[in-house]
Amino acid sequence: MIYAYIFVMAGVTYLIRMLPLTLIQKKITNVYVRSFLYYIPYACLAAMTFPAILYATASVVSGFAGFAVAILLAFKKKSLVTVALFSCGAVFLVERLMEMI
Image (cartoon, rainbow, N blue to C red):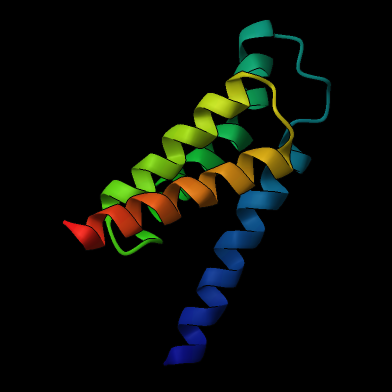
């Protein structure tokens, strides 16, 4: 029975990836559809990453502190290494402060 589930899931996954390639032969010229398709990977990545950011630490508060520092530094156009290091530092400091309280 488990093999039936695996084959059905494989078929569905294959169809989701194959059908757009076979059904849409010409280039998409609609500006709104192109804009929508452009942002889908970013939206999916954000939807999968955000909960993991909050729950990867011992406390949601420290996860949110690291997230806030990362957003602030990213908007200031800092490098990826800088953003990662300062975010980890913020999580570390908040975790230590919470242990003291």
